[in-house]
Amino acid sequence: MTSQTTPSDHDAAAVPAAPPRGASAWVEIDLGAIADNTRELCRRAGSAEVMAVVKADAYGHGLVPSAQAALRGGATWLGVAQLAEARHLRAAGVEARLLTWLYPPGADLAGALEDDIDLSVMAPWSLTEVVAAARATGRTARVHLKVDTGLGRGGALGAGWTELLPLAATAQAEGAIEVVGIWSHFAYADAPDHPTVRHQQEVFEAAIAEAQRHGIRPALRHLANSAATLTNPSAHYDLVRPGLAVYGLSPVPDLGSPTDFGLREAMRVVARLLAVKASPAGQGVSYAHAYTTTADTLLGLVPMGYADGVPRAAGGRAQVLAGERRLTIAGRVCMDQFVLDLGPDFTGAAGDEVVLLGRGSAGEPTAQDWAEAAGTINYEIVTRMGPRLPRVHIGH
Image (cartoon, rainbow, N blue to C red; front, top):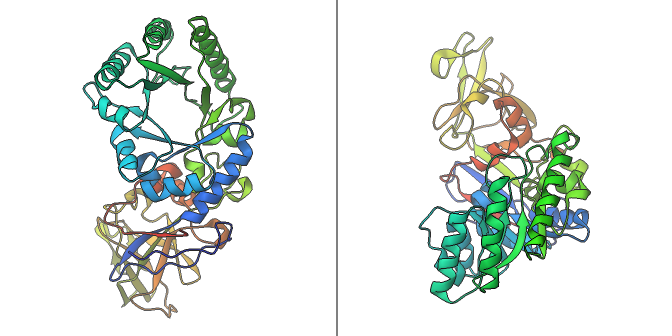
């Protein structure tokens, strides 16, 4: 793959990337945009530190280069869901503070401690395994206790939190662990006026007060995700954990676009037309002939399908940019390809680029457009781009 460097992270548009030789479709990632988005999130976070969440291969943007770009933009922490992701970052030479929160019983926590990775603890069993790893390695484990404040997912809930605290206090007194943070996650952060938002903050603050009564006084309290980072300063505490916004997408599309929040999309998905052919009126197109041409026209074949992350549900609904025109997918999305009705006056040819998604400010279809067409969320659109699509990173 070819990478190019932009003159500055602050450039409004990155230098165009040369696609991989012979590639019929690819994903272009503007690392300068990731750095700039992180700077904006740091500005909005005020005195709170910023943990850039780079889980799920940095939301499909590439784990290591995206992490490095976020750090260049001012993030002081990185967060990943899976332990393997954290180990991969360390193996790549990333030295920033790093938190991971999903691991099963029997995971290699000793290796995590040797790699200086912070671990989330949400139940007595996970605390027991972290303590065992600390004793085996002779290292003090850095842990973040997770409290369930109402999401009903990970974290110690109610009596479970009360049970966990004295165990953590004992382990800390023994020197096996250092409780670095207490954290939780919102259920309705994308609806900042929802009553659960304030309620969860109250539960969070009560959980912290309960921990303090056990002698646990962590340096970091963190609750805010992307949506809360952008819309709820009262939830910033000591650290915020933006994910989606790092990549220039709006976590609250009903409240504002990326541009409204000072962000720009880092991902563009581009394909080349593989065929342009004349078609008569009345020609059925793709499986089950869900689309039929209404006049003599030209059909174009785009070599991306649901195996690459194009939602099958978006057939007949989502639009792409071909030349200077927005065109709707004609008929069903197949595993490896879909068809466009290019119209009778199309002057392009096989090899021309088609933009599936990119920057709304440039008139390109966006991840949000695709999400609405497919009945999903913009998170899913960018994270589902398949591994057989080469990634082209630009901007450092």
